[in-house]
Length: 345
Image 1 (tube, rainbow, N blue to C red):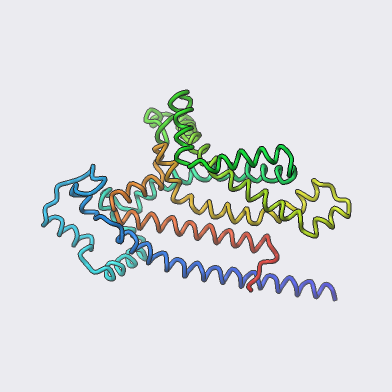
Image 2 (image 1 turned 180 degrees about the vertical axis):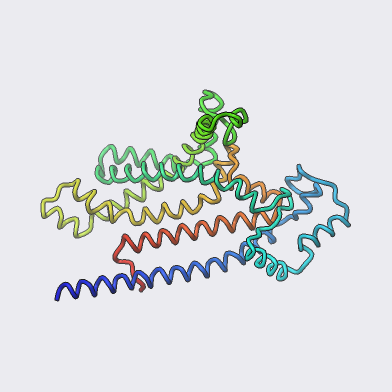
């Protein structure tokens, strides 16, 4: 009898999880529709005009060309900017369905190619930074919760709260000036050296890693406090649960309670936090990339914003948004797998 009840319970639990994922998928589809609308109209609400940049009358017009009224009108007609917004929106959706992200007015190249060149650099920067911050932050948070109220706990809290108050741009500038300019230990600009372009594969990989050290360190220090504080708080909350008290009464050791019971449950909100931060990897960290001249999505989007290049802004924000949604969906799937309490309310 108990076996039948157990199977029925598992079947009901699996059904609840499936309903939960279906509902989340529907939410994401609706969100994508909302993103497409915002992604189209938001750049067009910005002050300025792409052809003002091209003609040299706007901000960031270092690549300006001389445009007379007839040439400008012809370009507007060619790009469809002379049409009403609703008609431009229909054209935009049709292009997306055909995999066409448009042609960049300012950078004079297909948007898809421009984004494909820069997205890997952002991912190469973001994934190691968030991975290191997650490993160190989770380990430090568990240690601080284990030693709650001790000097170690107070010291780590003070240190990481101080780091959290430092803006990424300022933190990156300090590391750049100290280790790049003054001590000259690391490169100060770019993702690779020109001299390494014709070198062997191993030499080029070493050069890329060498250029990554300061940006990744900056990103790790920026992300670390959030992971540490969230883990510490989640572990402390879990240690107050009744099943932990019951485990103590049974004579389980602190190590068994911490790593066998408290940590697996405390990691659920941490996984959500990491998933959200990974979603931002598509856009890169604009401050870090700008400080170190790193050729990623964040720096590129800033340049496109300055140039009022609608096509690049639309394509970039769409890639970033879809990546965020995809990673959030993966987090939901992981949550449904790890947490048996997940069900549709």
